[in-house]
Structure formats: C-alpha cells, structure tokens
Image 1: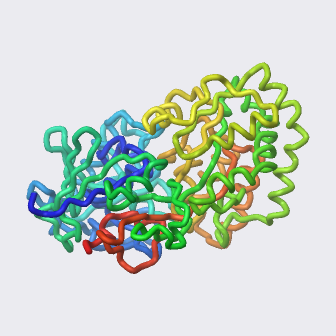
Image 2: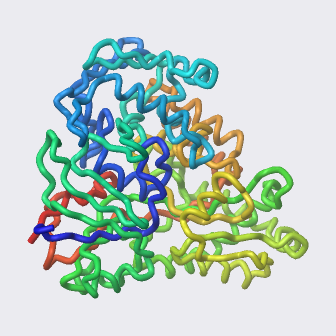
Image 3: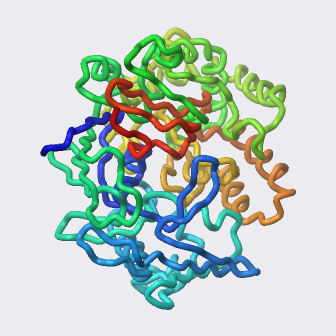
Length: 486
C-alpha cells in the first residue's frame, strides 16, 4: 500500500463483526466503521439520520415509518433498499446468539409478530412499503422508540460468501484476529481521514507500553487501561482525551437457584463488605479516572435516590457478613474476571475471611468470560464493565431487562426486571422519577450486581501521528473517524 497504515488498539477481541451477533462494547465500536443503522446518536445525545433520511411516528406511537436513503451503497456497489433492513433483522434472528438473548431482542421484542418469529419465519410488524419506505408496527406504545435502533447490532448488512458487508465508510476484513480497514469506494458520505487502518486486540495492561513504543497509534476505550499522568498531559507525545461517563463498573452475583448468592442475605452481605472496602477499588482504578458511585442511574437522571438512603441500604447488609463468611467455608466462591485489574477484590474478600475457589482467575479471555456469563453460568462472582447507554433511565435495560442485549440469567431479579419492563412503556415523563427510584431501591435490595461506580470515556493517541477533532468526547463517539493524520 502506498498509503500510511495507522494501527489502533482495543482492549479485547471483538468476537464477531456480524451486526446481529454483536454483544460487547468492543464489538459495537468496531462494526460502526462498516455498517449503518437507521439512525445514530450524535455527540450531544440527539438522534440524527444514518441509513434513514427521515421518519415519522403515528399519534398513537405504534407506527414508525422510515424513509431510507437509497443513495447509500454497499461496498459491492449495490444500492440500499428498505427491504435490506427487514432481511438483515430476520436473518439475524435465525443465527445462534452469542449472548443469552438475541442481540436484536432489545429493539425488536416490542414489534408485532416478534414473538411468533420461530413459527412464522418473519416479523409481521416489519413491513416494506416501497423501495425506500420501511414501516414498523409495535404491539403497544413505547417511550424510546427511535433510540432502540441506533445500536450497531441493528445495522443493515448483506453477506458476500461468509463475509458481511455494509454501507459505512470502511470495508473490513479479518485475518488472525486483526482487522484491516480500507475505504468503501461507494461510500456516500465524507471519506474518512485515515485511509488504511489496522485494529488489534491489545490487553489493557500493555496499552501504554504499545503507545510509547509506537507499535500502535491510538487506543480506544482507554478508560480500561492504566495510564498514570496521561490525563494531566505528562506522557507527551501520548495524549488522553476524556469525556462523559462511558462505563459502569459492576460485580455480578450469580443468583441462580442452588447457588450461594441465591440467598438474598448473602448478596446483601457481599455488597456491604465491598463497600466497607471501597477505598481499595478507588486505589486500583484511580489511573483509569474511576468515580465511585453505588447508584446505577447517573447524577441528574431519573431514578437517583438520596445518598443517605443508599448508604443505609448498603449498611443493612453488615449484619449478615458473619454468616456469609461462614457459608463460604463450606461453599468457596468462584470469582472469574478478565484482565482489568480486579485482583484487589480477591484481596479484600480473602482478608475478611471469605473463601474463594481454586478456580478463581483474573486473566480470562473475553471469549471465555462472555461464554460463562451468557451460557455456562459457572462462576459465582463476575466483575466487569458495562457501557452507559444515554440519559434516559431505560438505557440500563440492555443490562437488566429480560430482553436486554447483555442481560444474563445469573443477574435476573424479578422486581428489578419487572421494573425495567414496565418503565420503558411509560409515556408520561412526569412519572419517570418515582418509577425508576423504585427500581433503584430494588437494585440495592435484590442486588443483581454491586455497583462500584463509573469510568469516563477516554481515548489515548500519539499526537505526533494523529490529530483528534476538537470536540467533546461523548459516551457514543469511540470512533477512529474522529482522527485525521498529522
């Protein structure tokens, strides 16, 4: 190639670039370069056109009609049609899901005919009215109708052999877990600033070394990497740019029947024990920009409850700590984590007498971790990061809703799940506060996970090689499209 190649690292393997199988934050970031959803979320959180030029919602909020931009072209030269979306979604539902739910369930489950798909082979509520008109019919009105279709997993795609292609700015090929990106010659938008890009899986522990040795030019989702001094500008030419809260840090507890954490008193004790030692989490994650916060809803977001109430709910579990520790002597707990720096958690637990199983590890690959989380359910404790969706409290549905894209049965707690289901049907915004405050209380009481706090979205890059556009780094713009060459 005559063009300069820019190398970008991400914290773990993306698993797949087929949109309806996407089930991780890394995967969502990667597929955005090749595929277009109907709409997208702009930097300020507003919904903007993507593959759809315009849309209209019926007065009863049950019919959503999109005008598709048929000037868009797939990388094989063919033009986009409305029917490509229906085919993409229905073909996606026929694939074996990588997660517990189909990654499409979050957005499609309220559509008419979705739950009959296995019997009928189609979603009757997805209708192609003409070459450029796609109509969606919902079983009942829902609040965040458009936002459901912004995610990469809802993008339009087609298969050429066993390779998915899209209408986005790049064409992606994968060889030996390395992605090569070149411009889509038929892309209808502004050409990307970086013409040739390679994306590599670079574990967060070595990300800074790879940047300083110039083996990579940028690192996305850099809040997962330890980079002391980067935010303060002390690592020149390596620069870091941080923005909104982009990730929840949580510790999932396996509450399936027969497990130690099926007993709510044990979950309550665990939560209290972790928060008595939150200082160690702060120390471990300090260089990642960690902000401790036991609440799952953001500041100023519907669902926040008084801090005094939260602290009282957490302290209530202290009375069960003794019996919990004793129970682990008979039933040691299997703690499974990826390489994000969760060793402090084991130190806290062991220091307080909690018995951990010999199978406990902190170096599980993303593939093995997600297989246990979605399919096998063998660990008792699974700490991880989960993306912060947006300002509406329904953004937490992807994690806690029964049809959520990253939901796992190990964290299913009836009151919490019921609250998330009914919450998304609320159309009266005045009712959001009281409803999601009740959900907050149920999370603290039933404890699908212990919420430690947030990491702000961050990107690191070599400023001698790249320029990052001068704009606010939101939780949605993880993109190499923000870079131009120096």
